[in-house]
Image (tube, rainbow, N blue to C red; front, side):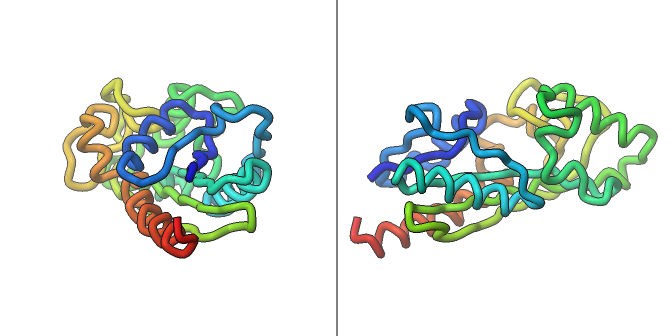
Length: 201
């Protein structure tokens, strides 16, 4: 059975493939299948965005589909950028532009007020509709300047609780043990295993 990953983001695909590599499923991405629609991420929450992507892609592709959406929630900014994390500095913003915008909003804010969390929601659907949603959270702080060239998105600004390096400085192995996406995918693994048992796959 194939599992469709409902994303064309190469950085996200790389992480997802590593985290799902031992599942008894053939993993394919939205970029591998012609004529799949671009799903507009216009929902009010990351959960609703993930569910929308999973349901629409599963309906069109007729495949078991996994979609995730992630938001960075900064306490000092009342949870922003949140669902708009990928578009914080504009619709076509680069990772660096979003990071600069975040630092601009936090200019002068002391470190003890720069608490934040990454929230990742993973939705799983088949052509009958939504099967389940799970969530992973990683708490930490936003530092005052980018550090590290690894990871993607806000990784160079985020230090997870209990760490001294940003996600941009950590090795992929370490990040993939502690990150929000790793926690969500661990739960998604259990959901997918249950789905396969129920379907007799």
